[in-house]
Every structure is written in C-alpha cells, then in structure tokens.
Image (tube, helix red, strand yellow):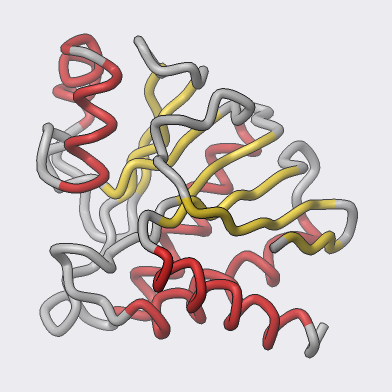
Length: 179
C-alpha cells in the first residue's frame, strides 16, 4: 500500500529491513547500548558487520525516544539511524516516547539530506508495544511531520509478518481518509 502526502510517498511492505537497496537510510529498533541484539537490531548488526558496533560504541547509551546516526557499513544503505523505542508498560509516557522515535529519526534524516528511509515496527517486538497502537502513533506522528520535510521523499514501513503488514495498512488507510 502506498499513499502520497505533500509530495512524500509513504508505503508499507512485507519484507526484511536489511534488504532495502533502494533506500538511503534504514532504521534500527535499537537497544540502549546500540549493540547487536535480537530482532531488528540483530539482523542489522549481522548484515552490517562488526564496523557498525564499533561506530555505535561511543554513541551509547541512548534513552527512549532518542536517535543517532551511523554509516551503513556492509549494508546496501548509506546510513543506519538507531532509535530506542519505549518498553510498553515500563517507559512512560509510551506514546510520546514512541512518537519521539519517529520525530527524532526524521529530524536526523533531514539534517543529513536523506531522501528515503525505511522503518521497522519500532517497539512492537521484545518491547511489547501492541502493533495497532504503535502503528497509530507512527502514522499520526509522520503525517504531522510530512509538511515540514524538505529532503525526505519516501518513507517505507518494512513489516516482518503478514499480520503486521495488514494492521499497518488498515491504520494507514484509516488515517489517510482523515487527511
């Protein structure tokens, strides 16, 4: 599913975040220490190679809602933007911290003149954020930021499962009808 708002394409696909060669920056749903972990962080660090963890080391730790940028190393992407999503039920207020992930990531993308970015479903894996609520926060935040973007022209959500894709498409469809 794809929607264009203010000249910016927002899309949802099922796939693997490390297999997005047409995207300039991918987003890592990072841990506070910016180290290899499970899920998205593990996949990105494995594909990027040890240089990514070396570059991340002096940038850590980060707090929920914060984002930092590194090179892509062995990935087909020029940059990786790492953000720490909130742990659902622990980091409060979850919705504000999750929205800050998207805001701060897009702020860095603009600062580095990045034209395309791919997000995973931040905080929905091990951090336990319900997918539907997380998608709602993500799309509401992004749609609010879109009119201010100058460099970013494509925002892609790369969802790992069919059910996550269905939920994101449903939320995106509902929100775009209100624009």
